[in-house]
Image (cartoon, rainbow, N blue to C red; front, side, top):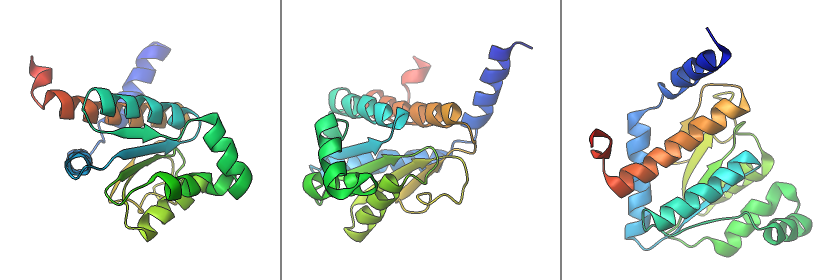
Length: 183
């Protein structure tokens, strides 16, 4: 069997573990946030930050759900310089998050200090939170959200691509409805 076929099979095994109830709960939180005039704030590091940007644009444009991300270099470096890298997302949330908002934090390991501190802040302030993580199920953010999407794998690309697939599936479900795949 070719490498690509093996890779595809492994990825299919990973996404086959997605939980429909988690998906439904994420979709409900996104719709509820929109209905109460809140915005979605997405954040991550590295590839997860790039994913946050993509999904923020799709939620805004395709789903008409206001969404932002924290991927501006001046924002990151200003807050990291003043509060430390481990606190910059938490401090940005203090500035940008409103009571009706929903925060989505993405961390492959679930142990990135800046993501963990942001998740704890969301809990402290009763801000709705969805977490996306992978690697160890006992990672630090896997129990901190209202919904916690965990990918049972220890390789960054598999975890990140599973997160991405889950998130774009949410966008498609919200914007096109559950029956669009059958068309």
